Length: 159
Image 1 (cartoon, rainbow, N blue to C red):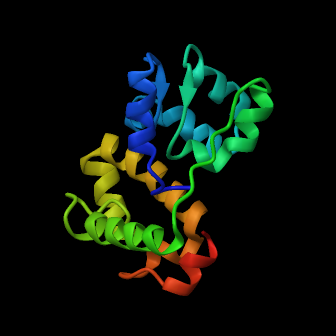
Image 2: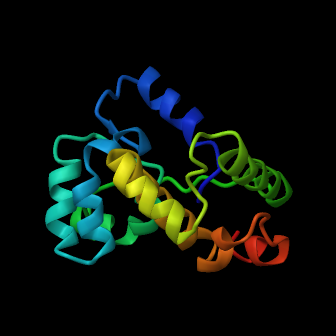
Image 3: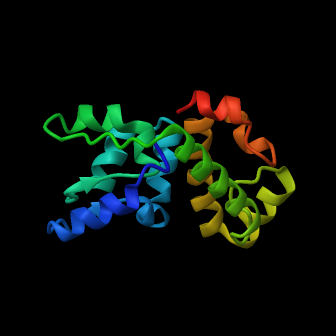
């Protein structure tokens, strides 16, 4: 689940000596593979290619596919991060507002014209945004990104 302390967990793993950690920082280097996963084009092959050599796989968008990843790596350990629901709601709301207003290009915004310009002018940024939008929409519901503000009831149902 997003917004549950994954950055802190990442730091803890690093302190414990884990250096090969796949997280959202690597999305831009593996977009084509994530596109294959999102389009259901041999996701097993894509996962093997992305995660080969990694000691830890965590964060967005991997949490959307944790069951598939666990099937591929049956001896893997799964850590479920949780958070108080009210704190989680505040964090998700704050992140959505920041992504829509503070982050250049408003990566979570939908809109045909914006996405076409993004795809044409900055293709690498567009690829990153596609994975980001997929993870948010999968986690919080497809209609989540179509509005300026998150619907609290619908979003909390995803908790």
